[in-house]
Length: 330
Image (cartoon, rainbow, N blue to C red):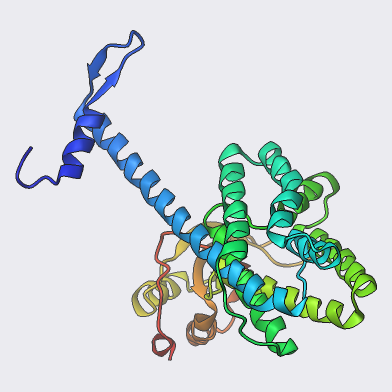
């Protein structure tokens, strides 16, 4: 082992240096193959650790939302969690048991519709949530109904969002919605909304209309928090720019605004039959919502007749997208 090598790097080098061939004999491999496998191992290890952190945070946060806010005040949420809370209130069965039992059919569906890895992560996350709710002595924060609805939904939504970031779910409703959506053509949001309307209707009938109304508020707070955790606080916008001043706008985007740009070659036509076709450059860039106004103003100075199309981008990875402070947009 070289002095510059750590023990961990030394062990990994020995592990990747030899592999068994089809006859079971050790076979030395090239440095390129070793480096490739080592790189893949590091990515897999990092992803596993991130999944563990996200799922752990999700379990702790959701447990706090349930035990610290909803359960002491006899409030419910939507989805499988809401069913578990509703059944627990009417039968006195421990909610931690119900969370696992009621999720089982949805987890089986997840195994069949998604994959084994997702199934394993989800069942571990749900069991850990049940254990957290049962054993961790979360403090009861408040009895104010409005605060319970808002912050109970917030912590529950944060937990669900972190679990999704970790590649699992704490509530099987999403899995059912994906399955029904594939069969029916309905959106996942529509299915989950309809599912929760049924739950809240039962809550109004079995408990009270007041509890059902507060439960709707909890659901709204939770779903909005999930969106923030999964999609990020920054909302991205894809901007397509069609202009005869393409080169000037490209320099504006890359040099002045320090953003990346993709350029397509296209044709534009106008008139009744689309005659008078001409070559045109089409520029595409992705920016945050805080940068939209600045980009539009700068383009207006270059080409007041530029055709600009904007659409919401759910997520981005790589490229020139950067985190910026508010002062960068002034």
